[in-house]
Image 1 (cartoon, rainbow, N blue to C red):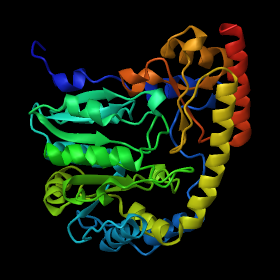
Image 2: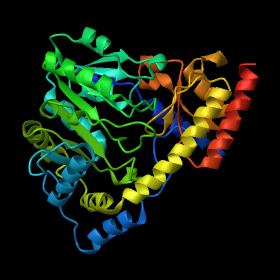
Image 3: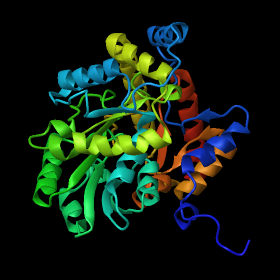
Length: 388
């Protein structure tokens, strides 16, 4: 064909650096993957049973576009109990196919062509891509190890233009493990108010925090009316394959998202919604059990990476460490490729998460403790050969 068939915005998207290394590792034997951000735990048994029971009851039909009311009510109670933020389950919560769909709905509902979204980086690989797919312009603001990868409000303000529509934050952070302080978030809140901006907050890792407070952005004074809050069940409840998340936001935003959702998805999977309801009812002991094990691994990987000469900021959230690998003399992509081929350890190049990640790699400690020890031993041997 002589015409350009594919949309330019699709052709311009970068391939996911995470999937690239996952696909390579899948073809090799004896690989220990520190690459994929997925709990190594199986979904807790009561949650599985609830999903199976929903099938056995015959709950195999569509739900409301918003999702099962009992689940929306449980999410509202959950957020109220944890963070003191109030949402009406009738019209201020929508259940989505993971936070991935939440991102799509949010940006598609909000952005006109050329609208800018400020995004602190390093960040999850989907953020910039989803903004671009919706016709917006992602504006990256770098964070730095010396600031514990917290965003600098002054740099955010410098990036604000008449086209800026929103500030996007994702804390606890993937890939750095950083947890934003209340002080930093209050400063961002002040910017949002001063410049009349929305704040989109991805808080999928809110329950995975170690020795720090997670501050729900919508719970800050005056922020609920201008915040779109995203959350889900994949990380804290080990439910990645169930694909269930939510958006909590003022009615006008949720109404707009439902208009898109009804034509693209219809409703989140019914079985997953009933499983998520059980997660909120009985899953807390399992969350605490997994959290304690992640913390044990976190301490191991932070100590070992620094001891072998890879400077690493202490991660206080999620299940990632983000070491600086420049001592190896390699860039992050070469480091990851060489480590995979020589030592069969998979990590993700930091550049996959934005330019601020160049020179770093992401190591997920969502893997069994002994396997993590072996992976770290292999990394240390690798460094001794290459950094001499």
